Image 1 (cartoon, one colour):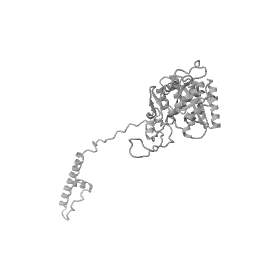
Image 2: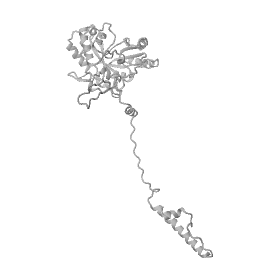
Image 3: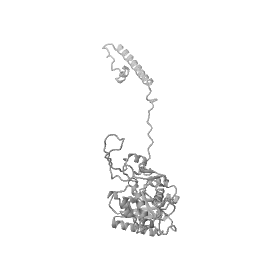
Length: 382
């Protein structure tokens, strides 16, 4: 601190010499001089303060770092959530090119695709063919049935799966079904629909599990005709597989297939055998809508290692709302009796609205709505 500043801090005249006894005139003159010096010192100190850097007049600019733009809540939540790995088997011998003899272990219970990327196909599960991309088992054994399955609670309470088919045929109807149906409801796409790839991605983004409908020959074919590329009893195994591959190539990210019609085809072992073997080879689910008691699907699925599920009721054969709701109530009764039930229907406006209403009510009664893969009998898991 400068001497001038020290003088300011002291009481005025603190260092002044005391007056001499008997010299009053001298004392007065000295006091006057000291008073003048003190005044000069005050002025000088004030000037020094005024003309040094002027932190009080013009403070140095304060640099404030610009805050980062906040991420949307959804994006921030996704980045904070732990990454979920797709299920895979144990590699006792690591793949060629990997560093060291490391045993790679992943949790085999982690079934289901991470919903953040559910609309993106897993390249390891795609086989390129003349027909287009086909679903296939990955080199490490993963199946589309496992990877593209919608996760569920795993609880043992009463469970109901609902599969709504015919998506892709009507653009407006498909959009409404994806928007209105709860994400636990499984969507089935008709191969003859339009923009299936786009609708598949939208459905998966909304959390739905997906299956593809395969046109199979019904009785009284071709008077009753499921459409082009129908698999028929009279067709050779090669012809039927070619038509199957066309259906399978229409999009990706589905867990399996379900029949569209097909009562005659499903009852013929020569026709049904190669079809089911192909599904087992590719790791796909087969869902039988349960409309034909003569279907050979359960036996062949077990033989060929195909995850299999069978419907308990078609909910909208009668197209009025009250009947649909009664059919859904029947599913609930079946689920309470045996633990689970599967219902199938079509993407009619009345069906979609009734299912959306019923699901909301059934949840409150303790019914869990699950994807169809959750109720499949999987021979590979015993």
